[in-house]
Amino acid sequence: MKKIITLLTMAGVIIVLTSFSTFRQTTQVPYPEGYREWTHLKTAIIDSQSKAFNSHGGFHHIYANEKALLGLKTGKYEDGASFVFDVLEAVRNGTDIVEGKRRLIDVMLKDSKAYGETGGWGFEEFKEDSKTERLIMETAKMKCFNCHASKEKNGFVFSNYRP
Image (cartoon, rainbow, N blue to C red):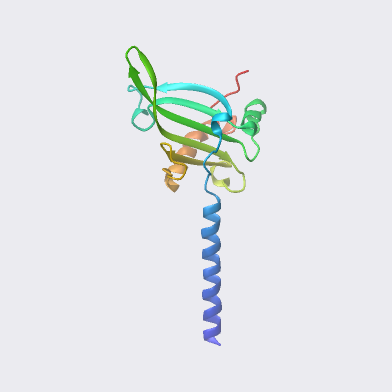
C-alpha cells in the first residue's frame, strides 16, 4: 500500500511540474511578427550623454498594434494590445546621423491573466534581428515593470496618443 501511495504521489508531482513548465512556456511574450506595419507612434534618439546609452543608445522607433492604439485613445488597454520599442544604432555619416544595425526589440504585450504580477503586461527583449534570442530574464522583467509602474495612471504605458 505504501508503494502505491508513493507512486501516486510521485505521479502527482510529475504532473504538477510538467504543468508548471508548460504554463511558463506559454506565457513567453512572442516575437511581434509584422510590427513594422503597425502604427508608428514616434522616434527618439538616445545619445552618448544619456545614462541609457550603453544599453539603449541609438534610434528608438515606437510602434503600436490596433489594440494598443485604441488603448492610447481611450486609456484602457485590452488583452492583445502590444507595443514595440525598436532600437537601432545611430551612425554618423558625414553631417548626417543615420540608422545602423538593429540593437534590440523590446516588446510589451497585454495579457491580464498571464502577466497579473506585472500590471497585466508581459515584457521581452529580442537581440538584434533574432526572432528567438531573448535577452530578458525573470528578474529583468520585474525591472521593466518597476520602471513602467511610474506610469500606472497611464496604463503602465509611456507613450501618449497624438492625433
